[in-house]
Image (tube, rainbow, N blue to C red):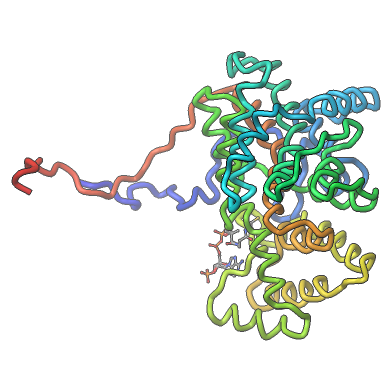
Length: 382
Ligand SMILES: CC(C)(COP(=O)(O)OP(=O)(O)OC[C@H]1O[C@@H](n2cnc3c(N)ncnc32)[C@H](O)[C@@H]1OP(=O)(O)O)[C@@H](O)C(=O)NCCC(=O)NCCS
């Protein structure tokens, strides 16, 4: 006889609300709409810190002092470039390849070039070195991947650039201005880590088999790609562009809700009173609009936010303001989720290391509801 869900009162579809492990990396407080990385509020890290300080905090479990940060930045700078084989592989991909598939492929190619490739997956020191290389090369692979698909040659990363500046430099081919770097850096800090989200959890599942960090990263990227997760920032921008003007926004959203459309960039499994990161990013995105003399997207956003809150009690998540901030920075829409990857590899790496430090194979149970004990009928008699 088949088991049924009623025999498992703790069963929760999508594992909603189910603790699936112990972690000291980040804490989401849904009631206070707050997010802390290793005890530090993400808003403080975004406002006063940097993506590099955040990545150091996630991997090395403490904020760096000035000397540690200098040394960390130098190590990342020295590791920004990637082997030619990565570019050869990216050049071989069809023109229509989504940049998420390119960055996933790039990490697969990169893995065997890591000097610690043959180190056991439980070698913590080697994993930390791998994590730094994984973080250092992400912006180069996304930035130069974008150049390659445009038929341009990759350019050498400037080792003095942080991840945000490197990314902007390679995407635009010009030296980025500090204000733009600050906006990108803040968004990457907010995107760097977020507990047991689907892609991080998938990364941990992979590492729990004692597979390696790179395999965990590739799993994470594949999982992040979907529109219910990282892909939402791209879908949110397409929606804003479809709406077009603030005058169209109210009618558009009311019609979308009446026809039960999912509004991309709204809602969150963990935050039912609002995503803390969206409060900060929304402020940054709206200020950017004022600076750029283009407040249209901020105005559309305010109308959607008001109606979603009043009609559905649903708030924007970080993908919503990040989407129109990136658009105002002239970033091509299909790079939004890859930029999320550039930031999130720090979180994936921290989780992979934590999983491997104290591993237990992640192997949940399925509630079976299929047929059982059927009599095998030979092929010729079916
Ligand atoms: C993120 C998400 C998957 C979380 O979903 P969840 O915790 O599983 O919540 P559910 O999808 O069960 O939604 C609960 C209710 O809110 C509604 N809802 C949630 N998000 C919504 C959205 N973005 N637009 C419209 N309605 C939404 C659902 O339709 C559902 O309503 P119902 O009870 O009347 O059926 C969901 O909010 C979503 O799909 N958002 C859009 C994609 C997105 O922005 N993803 C990025 C997340 S960081």
